[in-house]
Image 1 (spheres, chains in turn red, green):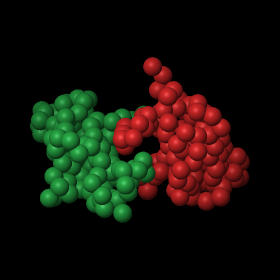
Image 2 (image 1 turned 120 degrees about the vertical axis):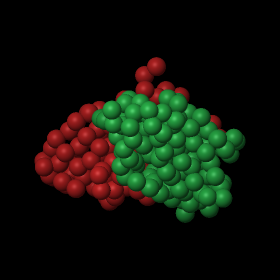
Image 3 (image 1 turned 135 degrees about the vertical axis):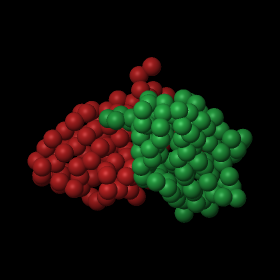
Length: 115
Length: 114
């Protein structure tokens, strides 16, 4: 079975450019999460969706960040304009839901470097 | 509010020795607790989870963890370390009211010495 698929795996861009990260969750999973991992701050939840609806976006650092989930099989995380401090590994994860808090299935991450 | 504290950002053990990674939690509701493992350049993978059933939880790769409410702990153990266990390990607690707003610890990097 295909797991969570993220693209691109690596992105190098210059400050001020727009960055779009993409995620395809596991089919049938109702929850989708975006996390950011840095050495300084560890693993931070940015936003999560349930059935394509954003439930909690309190972790989104500022207005430069936005996330969408237009359908059950696709989500994007956009940074515009990007800044060097946005350099991190961004993980997408999905979960089947079903009433019990359960396992998160993580993608392999998108490593973003903003110069 | 929910939180987890992992004691020791780096732990080294000899191959064949006991692995003990410590996690203490704080929760305003009965928690769900998790241990995840991250290998280099990969995403996190679930090792085991506690969801209010048995207090001793067995996971993959020979790991287990014991939920101790009186100590607010959920330490991860493995009787005999293997070289392939070298990775970073994260403890996590579910959000308030059992929500999906998981809180992850800062991680413990395990090094296994030959």
